[in-house]
Amino acid sequence: MGLSTRGQDGLCGTPGQRITGTNLCGDPFGAIGAILGHLLLGINLTLPGIFGIVGLAGVIVNGALVMIDFINEERANGKPARLAIIDGTKSRFRPIMLTAMTTFLGVFPLIIERSIQAQFLVPVACSIGFGVLFGTAVQLLIVPALATIQAEGLRASLGFGRPAAQPAE
Image 1 (cartoon, rainbow, N blue to C red):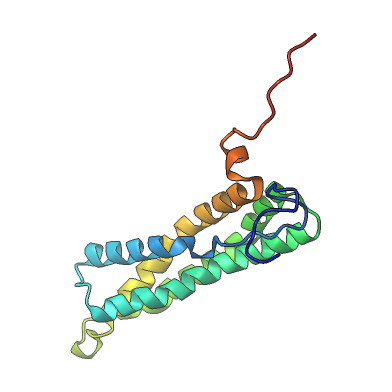
Image 2: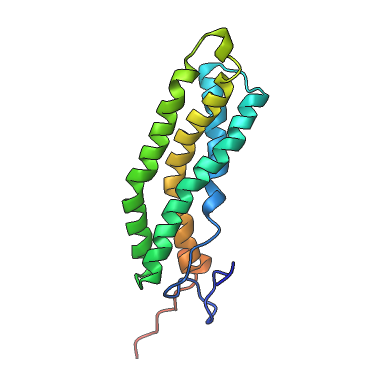
């Protein structure tokens, strides 16, 4: 269906409609998490740390892609948008969180390393580790919310798209 999120009748969320464009929403929160990690540990945000934030963007997007792909598959099978988003979020929560936790635990030994040889890589590990934790946690809330808004249309999700009640005769 291309990049458009509207059906032929102009409404969002028609059966089989694909949810798109929410993949990158977690990246700014990953950067915030990386900066908070640097502040928390007192590690200077150097150029290698910024490179870590750039690398972090790909890891964060991966979690969103997994969730959005599952939601799109459920929608293609005819499931209503809201139910597909709820099921997709519930079923992909564990794999996404396990990926984030194992990434953090994988770089944690490097974060706490104090040898001279490792000091060049500590900011990279700090950016990736804390950015993945914070970005993924926020992403698991933001992606389903944005998918719901996209599927139901912004006006309907804000309550403006409902028909007015008819007066009793």
